[in-house]
Amino acid sequence: MTGKVKVVITKDKDVKVPTGVRLLVRRCCTAVLVLENFEGSAEVSVTFVDDEEIRRLNKQYRNIDRSTDVLSFPLGENGVYDINMDTGAKLLGDIVISVPHAIDQAERYGHSLQREIGFLTVHSMLHLLGYDHEGGGIESVRMREKEETVLTKLGLKSFTVYMFGYLTVYDFFDVSRTGFAVLFTLCALVMSLEAVNTAVERAVDLAAKSEISPLAKVAKDSCAGAVLISAIAAVAAGIAILWQPEAFKAMFEFYKANIPVFILLLVSVAASVVFIFAGPKGIKQFFAKHVK
Image: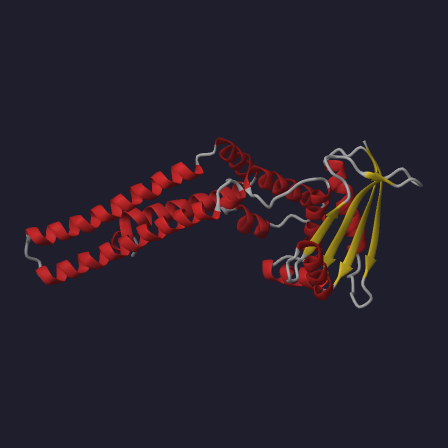
């Protein structure tokens, strides 16, 4: 059972922390520990800084010379933590949040600053407890699900984050950048060949001037065959790279709990299939026939 949670909040001299944020941070830290059924009391340090300071820390501890939104410094490993000898609380670590970065990201993603700082706090708390998303795959998905679970309980759910964060298969599948590059390249090839196929058909029709020509048929069939072969290759590559049963299970669980996102995904897939197999010409003919 989770005991007392002490959150020590500090800030740099020139950093302004909006009203209510300190309470929000404490609520976020406590909610994460409750979700994880953390045993005993805990202490966490949260510091608000500017971009210059977080860039200095990022370079010093991660050898990355640029600012970032948040940094986490865990004090425990594999569930073993240092103990505050005076209080008996477990020392989880330190969280450093860049206020200017948080403000910028809140504006960019279209949600409140409270939502953004809440997300950064929850995200970092999970890091302090041993979660990691750097490698992608199932562990990353589970971490994201826990983040959204906590934020939803705190009234900070954001559909924007779902739509732009979870519709990317990178969050579900353990695939290298090379693998994704292959998939994106093949998809682009299919769409490019479909465009070429449409252009060739128009050019052949113009040249033939309504006359039946075996050569015109060969040209059209060859282009259509090229589109079909590339589409089959793209599907085969997708199956070979993305066939990961655990990832599909994680996707099922996520979309089952987020029906609007699932519907959006289905519409996107359906639109892609129509474009690949019907092409711009087929789509235009359909609307010309059925839409007045």
